[in-house]
Amino acid sequence: MQKEVKLFNTLSRTVETFRPIHEGAVSMYACGPTVYSFAHIGNLRTYIFEDLLKRVLLKAGYAVNHVMNVTDVGHLESDADEGEDKMEVAARKEQKSPWEVAKFFEKAFFKDCAELNILPPSIVCRATEHIEDMISFVKKLEDKGLAYTIDGNVYYDTSKFPAYADFGMLDLESMQEHARVEQDTRKKNSQDFVLWFSQSKYPNQIMKWESPWGVGFPGWHIECSAMAARYLGEHFDIHCGGIDHIPVHHTNEIAQSEGCFGHKWVNYWLHGEFLILDKGKMSKSKGGTLTIETLKENGFEPMHFRYLCLNAHYRGQLKFSYESLTGAKNAYETLNHKLADWKTEPASPLTTEDSSLLKKYSEEFWNALADDLNAPMGLSVMWTGLRDEKMSTAAKLAFFDEVNDVLGIVKSEKEQSLPPELAELIKAREAARKEKNWKLADELRAKLSDSGILIKDRENGTDWFWKK
Ligand code: AMP
Ligand code: ZN
Image (tube, rainbow, N blue to C red; front, side, top):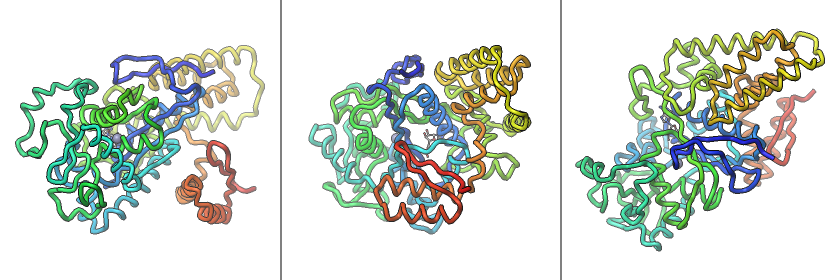
């Protein structure tokens, strides 16, 4: 039996009790990074929020199937189909192929995630490896009369999906009035969006594929609909991302998927608010961004940033400053010093008072997290518990383990001891196993063994140990 969790659902704009489609299991899709540059700390705030969501569901007793895409083609400079493919712009700037750029930044992204103690997704899928899925999705939309082709570009006809404005609570009339003049004049309605580009304004696009509509590349929105359908089916539990995705990307994903399947697609939509800088919005494409490397250069560890993010509710904006990051760093270090001290004390059995305090604080902590992921409240309960002089050290350590399962604010000694290169090898081996590439998986196992790591495959993933 799973514990109750309440979540704010963007669909209803209310906090609802989570009920899964299949008992005991959660299917969850998170829009992944566009890999044309390093992730900025705003992006990473969103992935920390999604990690918190996943850990809360795991702690509630669900098995979580977490799918994340990697956008390595089709995301134009503006989310509304204008400008050039971000991958191509980056490739020209870096004088590399878009494939090399994608590979490099994907690796950097997962390194950031590992340093932030973000649990890896169950499945990572790349847009460029699912072009066939996208083509057949677009064909279905055409067959249903929801798409039209002009000059080789296939567009979604939003006028054929009456609920189009609902999810984003959009005022289409006023949007139509304010539509930009330079907008693509092939569109029948200003909200229509491209499913497949074969008539690009940029004929030198390198990433392109054959399709029934001509050689070209997919639109950004179709990739999420097609890959979510491939891995999670036509109806699943949770879809999440940053708040900026509500009016365009997720609105378009819903129009495509519900238009194609003819029924409700996702039950719960969760959106994380933005991290902003004192100066305002942070944007990867316009520069002025902070990355994990920038924080490190300024004397901070990635885990200080995780603490900072968890100390703010995911539905509120987080104004980033080095002063607040310093506060998070101090709290993180105080916590670690206390834990280190306590661990040197000889273990003692819990008294009756310990057990009842442990139960009380664990329940208070869980109630905060189960109420729409109230991590700041959870942290406050954590500090009250850890400072309670009536609780023994052993009880405090046991309480902290409960907290840390959900917040992941301190890496285990085992995790801390793992150099990033070996963490990468473990991940690569897991990916090889999932793809049933046994030869590569065995080679990587042997390499890890040479570095002192023993691999144990379990039903729900791979575990590793230092060899004695
Ligand atoms: P992108 O790599 O641009 O596709 O964005 C990756 C994720 O970061 C998406 O879920 C966005 O909604 C999210 N995101 C973008 N900017 C911010 C920000 N400043 N704060 C929080 N999340 C953001
Ligand atoms: Zn998406």
